[in-house]
Length: 526
Image (tube, rainbow, N blue to C red):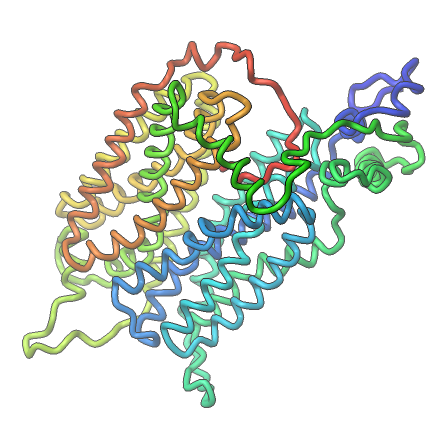
């Protein structure tokens, strides 16, 4: 008899008492893993939709909240700031209290505060409630990858995490689709005691929280991660979860699972004899300081700078993308560059008064956003196929060079339609985020690998926050600078990538690269 390719004949006695990794392998791969991946994918879609929703909300809310471009810039940075400030806390909480309760608690509260945000009467209340909602939104963003990976054996873990990550791209298509359904609808419901009118943009804020609300319902029926249960000594409960996975995948009764008990493994507990903030800080210091010493210092600087530039460009511009597309769609003049059209929408009238506030969204904005989201998602797939044949370094250099030049060209071309195409290609630099994470995994020793990835991703989030604010300032004062600056940064990133090891190094076995189970790791891969 064989299960998942593992022959049981002659090994029944040995398999009846085995490790969790062996038991996960025997549980097989099938319906349970796919359904679990879809649930985690829905959570990831909720993360990206709530992170980028303000790009569609702010153009429609600018009149109600009396928003300037600078205010829209720091509002767009709120979700990224929340992730930067609280990801470590959520990771620590998930390592001590469990993955499932942390995600369930944070998703429910994030959805509730999103509803409260939709009733905000002014800018300050909107910003405060949006920040609180984003703080709870960042909980699953720091934990869901770990929760997804720990329900799969080592054989299928990378594949399932990759499939789950694809929902991030799907979210960039669903978000403009939902916005297209809601924002063009005209309704106006006054709420006198709040002194507001409930309009479509407020409903969109609630709609973007729906993936979290739906995921929370599914998560109520899902178990805790078997890896976490095993790590805290709940071996019987852990084995019962693995038996459930086996029963669903193999369509067999749970009692037929060959493993009857799990081997008690010696888990590495950091600072087991010390507690408190001092132990946490010492652990962080020991893991971080070597990254800023030779020989790792150059690679730390390279990965952090490249991720900062890509995140600042991709996420920084994305939150302004609907506003830019909407201005172009509403332009009824002759040929003009993107910046000329954006500047024209803010010019004062001849009598010195400002042009009347216009918060209508042209349907072409949503249509173009969906097309670009589809191309963006496809780019991930193309890069995934090419990387095994070409190598990471050539792909990084070519994509970053081409997209950087397209970013500068988007400002220079006099035709707005051509400018939009170049601008869309400019956004494709985001497809290199995953490649840079893979590069970081190979460049750093196993001992410091997780911290190096965390640090580079943290710098990327800082880039998102800085980019959205800087672009808001430049679009108000000097539109062209935003394209020159961030296009130039992407080109410089490409030059930095020339120093990376080549394809031979990519294929060369690394001695310290050992397949290890993710154990209490809550860092966020791309």
